[in-house]
Length: 267
Image 1 (cartoon, rainbow, N blue to C red):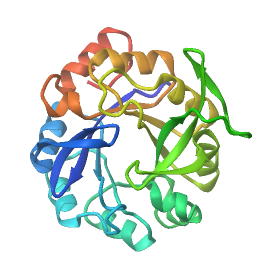
Image 2 (cartoon, one colour; image 1 turned 60 degrees about the horizontal axis):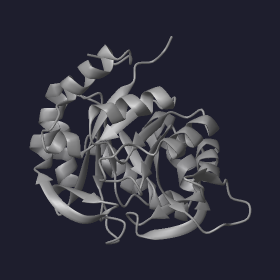
Image 3 (tube, rainbow, N blue to C red; image 1 turned 90 degrees about the vertical axis):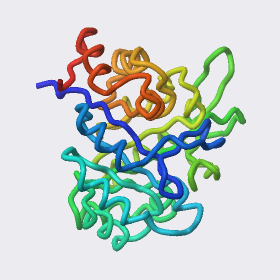
Image 4 (tube, rainbow, N blue to C red; image 1 turned 90 degrees about the horizontal axis):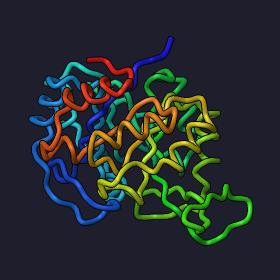
């Protein structure tokens, strides 16, 4: 049985407000997280992702009170990430009403935490977020790709896309799968906020490397981009922010468009 493809709005939160940027920079306000969450749940979003985008950088935990308020107004699966470093952080987030915990910087710094989270809360609760960026400096032992006659590899970034790690994203995806990730939230930093489509090369490479469900993120500017990522890769879900926050498209209308173009979604 083929599973339906999921459409997931994302709330990137900073200082208690939903924000949107370009390549993880130039942040601007996009609204109230509780009101937006309620709207997306009503419009038929399959899930919701809430990322406290400055938590790791500011060396603090996710704003729990806000997570609780969002959880109270939605009735769909809810993933929360930002600054998760310990099992206690994860437990606190789940107790606030989240269904899954997303971890990025904390997992790179201490990969064993992925297995510990899986053992404690179950695989279905563990989402490993991978923020990847094209690196055009040739490096031995990396998975090399090429586009427009330029060669590059995908580097994993942490601390909200601010710090490169030297880790190959394809190899890291394999490792997080082995360690027990239930899902991978894959964001292209190059495409983030550009509204010119997902990074198909990156998404396809990761999806073909792992059997863990993958959510594509970064670059969605119109429903056509979701159609492209579903047609050109076997990704499980597409995440978007701008097209929903600024009301250029509603979740239900996007799903109708995908259905009309033979993508199996839940209406």
